[in-house]
Image (cartoon, rainbow, N blue to C red; front, side, top):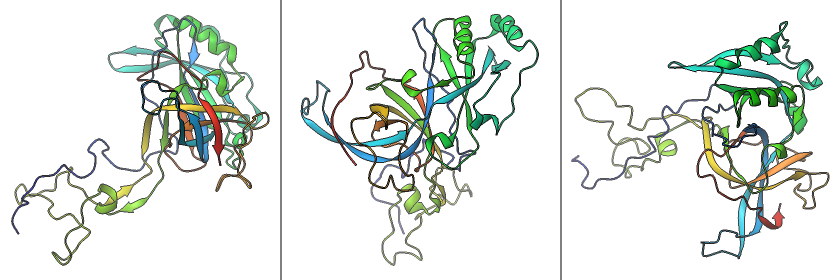
Amino acid sequence: MGHRKYAQPRRGSAAYYPRGRAKSMEARIRSWPKNNSNEPKILAHCGFKAGCVQIVTIDDREKTPNAGKQLVSLGTVLVTPPVSILGIRGYSKDHYGLHAEFDVYADEFPKSISKEINLKNKEGAIENAEKMLGRVKEIFAIVAVSPRAAGLEQKKPYIFEALVSGGDVKKQFTHVKELLGKEIKIDQIFETGATIDVAAITKGKGWQGVIQRFGVKKKQHKSRKTVREVASLGPISPSNVMYSVPRAGQMGFHQRTEYDKRIMMMGNTENNQIKINPDGGYKHFGLVKGDFIILKGSVPGTYRRLIKLRSQIRNAPVKITKPNILEVVI
């Protein structure tokens, strides 16, 4: 049993370590883009994955061989019910990171959310928050979405923070203050043709071996006692297995962020000209009702899972063009 005669790249990506289960069904967004305009804007929304379709479009990329020709691409349908603005949170910043300075909540919440949570302001909360704006560096909107608004059975709402960017801190605080207790639709944050980033928890696969988990090559038939295992776990000395050696373990149900997903279509099922619902609804989801978007390409996660949508953090285009959609094949 000599050493290998030829070298090869390592099996599996070293970028995704540790490959453990996510702590929550809800993905976290820890990096935010900067909005250079003077008008404040909330930079995130969310949706629920319904299913996939095929989109027939005219390629509007000028410097490609297929420019002006018909293209058939995969599209993912997300149901995007309105999100409710529950409150405002201000953060100060020092060498150790961000520190929450104040929380201000709306006086009234929608019924679907007020039944599940109970958040109340202290006396003079808004006035005290305005006094603290001098040392606040970032303003976040506390938003919530009810899965029942998307046609799901889950009662408990998802609550998360979305950065408010653009202008100064006072403008940002005033902008969210005016929206307290109101609902925001997806077309108030994004537009058709824009590219966004998505964050979600991937589909869980359970405990898998090294062949499935890392793509390790199977050993030759009858070469050793086993075939679907790693041939060598490392040298005799030092007598420990390095973390970089592929081992069996959890596969899937990881948090992943994917960049540059283009919004191909944005609309509402009540007034949309193109039919997007198959007969009987999408498998394991049902009929899409209300606001929806179609993203180009795939999106991490299984059906019915929460997908967070964030403004594009890299490769932002100078000009946004609406795609020319000829047909949606269900």
